Length: 139
Image 1 (cartoon, rainbow, N blue to C red):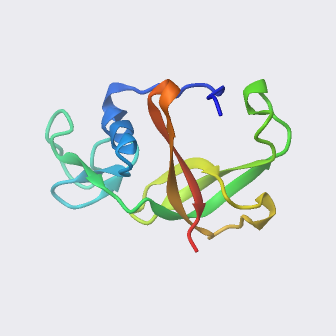
Image 2 (cartoon, rainbow, N blue to C red; image 1 turned 30 degrees about the vertical axis):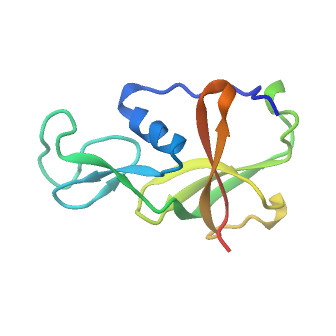
């Protein structure tokens, strides 16, 4: 199926994350000094940092977490999403700590619930040369 949705804008500081997705790797920023995990790219809150993100590295993460909030969209607000409704958009607390949002797939919307364990699913989209991360139940 052709990609008809908006294409994510990739800022330079997040390029390693998107490059990791292309390789089916889920990368998060991790502090080299104290081990704290971050998303998106930022500075460690636990101590002084080296300049230019020098205290942090992109590190393989589990790609797993749990749903902390979600909504079920039943009416597409943009024509590009009309074939997707109903769909679930969720806030996910990753096992490493940071939160991110994504769609929940491979699950009936009515089955999604708070604290549901989920894992990343990679959708390769050759026509935009990207891989989009979605999440599905981790059974």
